[in-house]
Length: 263
Length: 356
Image (cartoon, rainbow over all chains, first blue to last red; front, side, top):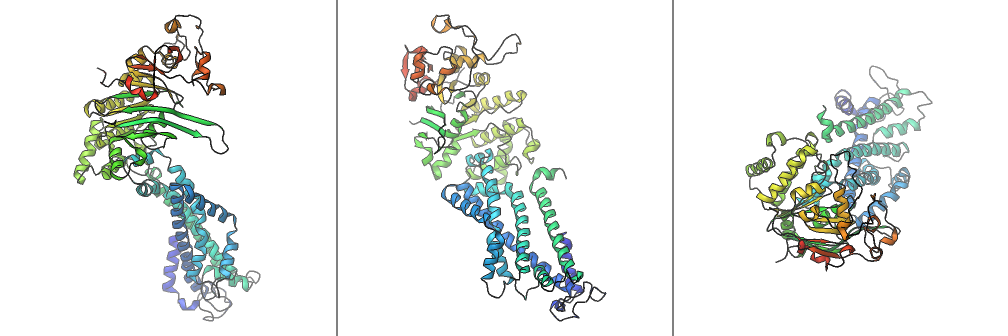
């Protein structure tokens, strides 16, 4: 499904003039027609072109923010669970407190302090700032259980230093969890970025799915029954989330040799 | 000369935090040493919760003692670093109880053999490494072509445990601590694994500390035996003497608990001929052991609440080890007349030569 989405974007780049995504490039508020397959919005953007440009940008925000979040979360989780002590208490405290604060509120506060809406890199940083909390917590719990396994003792008796035990013995078994939380983080990051944009905190120049929805709400497209305006971004978002879920299932199969054997 | 591995007054206490009043004494001032020459097999026997596994983990430095120290060639193993630690790990290895848990499910089974080769630099080339792995597998009766390249869940428990023995063959330590190596393996395969251990002892000259709850296998393969009860030594010495004519009431209970293939015989209950102890005949009813510990016994002998011969003194004092034979000692006030041994002198009653 992600592949279908990527194909849509790639093929879209060939058949649609992406410059048409700019305002006033076509007749405003045109319903779908052969020349404008998805119609246009009130500011005269070709909506097909907007989707072609907006989808990868939204995905990019989600992917990069999710990756940053999971990487930081995993490293902190390993440090916390393997070395315990003060580091663990500190990381655990920050994560537990951080998770109780409503994320969107923090994001909104952060975003409001950036003048003129968030550019895409800024959006990534803001979303990633919270994306590491949940992976850190989930993975720390897994590491705590993994480090008590007998094979960790065997590795220790085989002369492996602690860093090697973490990398070669613990990390591979965490892959399903890391992938699962990566997919979760990407979803959460996509959602957070869309949320911020819908609230009007994104950059007005950037064309993402979230900004499209912002304009949809701004011009009250739903009550004006301009369905071709709001339906495509929503369908794309649904496809995106379903695809991420399927990816999690597939990667789990890859990371778990027991499941692989049955194929 | 200092011993290869020596436990000196080692205790391990679990629990007893800020709010938890209950503490579990897993090991109580235990002293013991193993040497590599001549290679001996020492069995450490006890029921569940008697501190056997804790002892194994302490001896290997996988857990730290609450008090006391474990010495490797005279150095506290917690202070070993770099080269010293590497040589300690090369000399002292472990075979674990659970052949399912010791494999990382992510890797093929040869991972447990390749890891020590890599870290201890046992092979100079990939060919040498492969030869080493194949030789060690053959040494334990496995066919390399049937074992290598498999995932742990594709092999049986017995095969996996033999690969762990192969790991020991490959590393060639001077001492192996085997923590219940056969308790989770099919009965039909136990003999093979025990034979492999015996072979490690005889052919490769490795000393073995065989930890088990099973007196029968202990009797079969070991030279010396130490019977633990709640973290303390109950009886220790030559395995033939201790198992053949047990003197400590707990050892007697253990021997009586060995199931016999005879439905007429009720096991697990003591029906000890008390005249064998001191000539009196007052105790003759079977005593089914209870497992709770009344608090007032904590200051005395830990076996007092289950002991058929309990005396007033047992509740007040911890019995020292009494030397009953040149190669046997028991911690019981029934033998107060014999000469007492300090707990650190436990090794004096151990046979240093292998049993014929």
